[in-house]
Image (tube, rainbow, N blue to C red):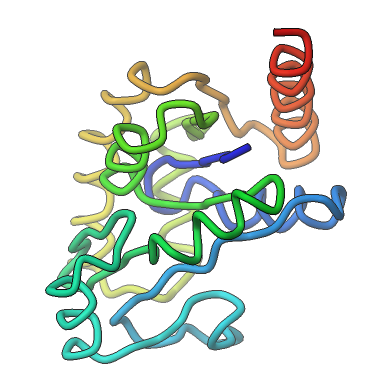
Length: 186
């Protein structure tokens, strides 16, 4: 089963995904490629595959991506062969921006698409500023994008408000259990 978690920057996708992976050894994480520089603590091949613009462009030209997007002047994408191999082996968890999630949704409509929402616009702003990974202009750009992206939430299978990490993880686990049950009984 393909499980896609999306939402605006700063909503907690990475934290939720890390928690889900710790709780369920049967889940695998689909690592994407990016042309952005690693943030402190990020590991190549674990968090992302960090590649050059040239490498990324070559993969685009060769049609190697299941999805790719340009986000905040950097490229992000997921290789089709890697994603489909993981899907053949079991449940695959994807954390992705809204553009990429929409592309995956059109290619893999059988997947489970979950849109994470912040508990409030102010909470999202505090989270983005608290990361201290972006300058003020970048934070403002991300906030503007977040407002546009949140209007797309209803086009996904589920909307989950991230009030508190543990509760959000439990809710997503319940969604996944229901989806697995529906697959098994159909």
